[in-house]
Length: 277
Image 1 (tube, helix red, strand yellow):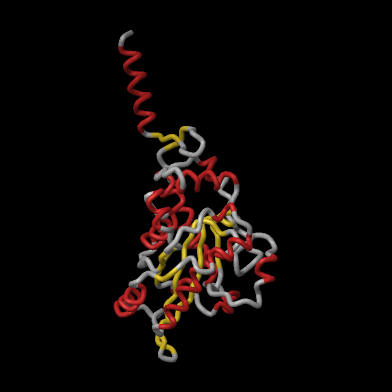
Image 2 (cartoon, rainbow, N blue to C red):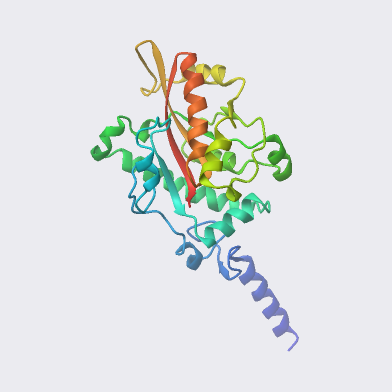
């Protein structure tokens, strides 16, 4: 009789040891799941962006923003987003970004990596030959920076973690090319016009950007590094967490391209974001 409770306790311990609790919904799931930390039910609810209506910003619906901006200089080729910014994604990103729940890092990194693979597949097709280059030839991964104030508050830059996940999983170099000298406040509370005005002079290049790029170019042996018209050409993947108006990516890409061009380096910039609002 005394052995039954002991056996039951052991079996319960063994069962829980070989299972884990879904960090998103709290249910018990097996050790082996498609996405780290979440159950199958939650993984099936990930709001992937499958159908792209706007080839420039990656929006799954018609995009009046890009139509209005078609006459302006676009400093990055295009953006793609892994998911739509649904309440569920807002919660997951919030857990990681604002509450410092590190467990979400691997999950969001896996989501980003899958979006990157989809991007490679998309741009390998002939139908996108107007973009001239393929994402199979991405040379460097970088990210949108945060200010020193935000970095001290959070202890990390969420965009950098996502970018480093992509770089690590695809054996690409990550280079920190940008800086954010001043804190611009939370962009989620600002209108579209306010965002664009705020971002105009929000970023600068990393003081060592030119040396980092030139050092990389000298070491790289891939065919993606070429000299045309005496200019070195490098393809950069710029990573951020949320795409809203595109003003942040536009500002970052402008600073990168202009400063690099001053040093005779031509940058082709593609963007990848976790969620599209």
